Length: 363
Image 1 (cartoon, rainbow, N blue to C red):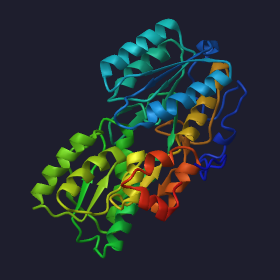
Image 2 (cartoon, helix red, strand yellow):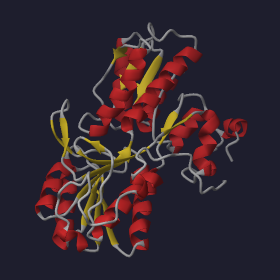
Image 3 (spheres, rainbow, N blue to C red):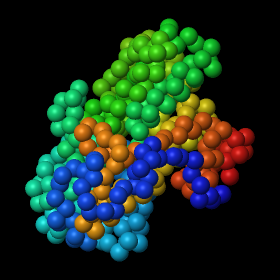
């Protein structure tokens, strides 16, 4: 496996670039939250689950832990394992022990109450990857003090474009194609951004959804929902917009069972997703180098732990926002993920995929 210190990604926010001002004076994008408690040495992190994506335990946990440890701070990183009640219990235990800053990946809105508790104690909260918002879906307001994520509308746009490109490559007219929309869990703020970005691109090409089941972040449930949609369409479909690789994998099992191969989108550049891309079962996956996101979040948190009040030049939902740029991975670009160290060729290139790996230079 090739290694490289260069990852072909740029930060959307250039000043986040210097990520943030290290001075303790008031910044233009500051949240106004007291950092009095931020002199503590503990960073408290709650991850959402292990099933929606392998990134949380395999990528984000070790990257965040290393960043805080290297900076001389303690990281308390726990996983709610898809249970909102466990999420709340973990938070209470962490807050009882003391946190200088909290980094929360929301799960079904569980981070809202935790954020409010932390802020009452003067502890700044960083919404990580997923927004922590109040208000309505049409008019959300960021509750957390800072938001660190990828440009998630761009993620959706790349997915939508992969569907459009896949239809055209198959000689299908997007305006008349039967496309099924399989989104993520609507309680996840990012799911709306993925959906909006994808729909904007697909609508511009003339695509209208032939079916759109309720979104989930669950491969098996996604497979069941898609199978029902496929049945309602008489077993005919021309493409599927799938919000992530896990959902795409479930959908592909149904397509395989019915002898169908159509354009399918996805994101996360998971091992299964990359295999499906190489096999031509998934048109592309969107690669989000978690190391960049973890690096941005940890640098921000370390500034807060030092008692500083960082600022950024960009806001989203009314709070400082730091974003990184996603990358579309087609078969020819799978090696990019391996070279960056975010996937192993030995895991990808199993017997079924070996020929495709050789064809596209994945090693």
